Length: 403
Image (cartoon, rainbow, N blue to C red; front, side, top):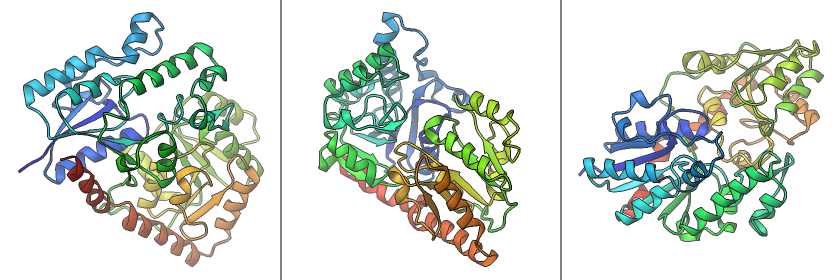
C-alpha cells in the first residue's frame, strides 16, 4: 500500500538549506513510492506544483498592522487552505513538516491534530531554544533564553536590535509554545547531535528526539579530484556566516584567489570592501544556481564555511563533499560532526582570520597525491553518512513509529 505523505514547508521556493532539503526530500520520497502532497505558502516555484491552488499567500513581514501580526501568530487562511486540500484529496497517512512558522504558523498544527494526522517535523534551526532562532546576541553566541527566561530576547533586543521586532518574535515563540508546537508533534528529527542536545534542554522529551543528518544525491557523476586553484564561498551573504572573517582572511593572503557566490544583506558591505582595492584577489560573481553554481563547486580547490553561529548540518558542506571537495569550516555547532580535521577538510576557530589562514596554508601545503586523498575522503564520507539510501533507511524508522 502506498503511503500518502503531506509534505509541508514555509514557502514554495529556495531561500536556504532547509528549503533545498524540502525539495530533495519530496523527490526522494516520490522515488521510494510515496504519494507526496505538497503544501506551502506561495513562492517563486509554485508553478511547478500540482497543489499550488491550495497554497496560501505569504505573510507580509514588512507590515506591522494588528491584522498582520495576528496572521503571523495564527494564520487562519493557511489553516483553511490546508483543510480544503485534505477534504479534496483525502486524509494523508502522516505529515512531514520542515520550517512552517512565520507564514503557515501553529494554526496548521492545530488542524493536523484535529484530523488525527501524525506529525513528524525536521528541525533546521533553534526556534525552540531561542526566540530569534540563532542563539546570537550582538554577534556573539548566547544561550540565556534556553537556560533562563526567553523574555531575555525582548530585554536584550535580540532581533535587529529592535524592541518591537524582538517583542513580536517573543510573542510568536510564547504563543506557539502555549498552542502546542512541541506537545502536538509526534516525532522531531534533529539534523545533528549538537542540535538534539539543545532541543532536549529546550523541553523536547527524549522519546520524541531523533538525529538524522541531511543528505544529497550521490549517484550523479559529478566527482572531481582536480581543481582550478581557487577557494569558494557559496551561500547566503550574512554576517553570521562569517563574511567579515572571510574577507579579512583574503586581505591577509593576497596570493590566494577567493571566489564568492550568493546574495543577502551582507552584499552591500562586501561590495564596498571590494572597492577599497585591497581585495583584488576576491571575485564576487553574484547569485548563481543550477549548472553555473555546480560548475564553480566542481572546479574549486576547497569550499569555505566560516560560520559564526551554531550551524546544524550544513548543506553547503554536503554539496561540497558530493563533488569530492575538502571543506575548510569553523569549529562550531554541528559542523564539527561533518568534518574530521586533516582527513576530509580542516576546522578553524570562528571569528579568527589567523586560524582560517592557517587552515588554508595547511591545505595549500598538500602534495597533489595528498590533496586527492583528502578529496576522496570527503566524497567517501558523503556516501557513508549522507547518501539518500542512508537517510531514507533512518527516516523510514521514524515514519513507522508514527504510523
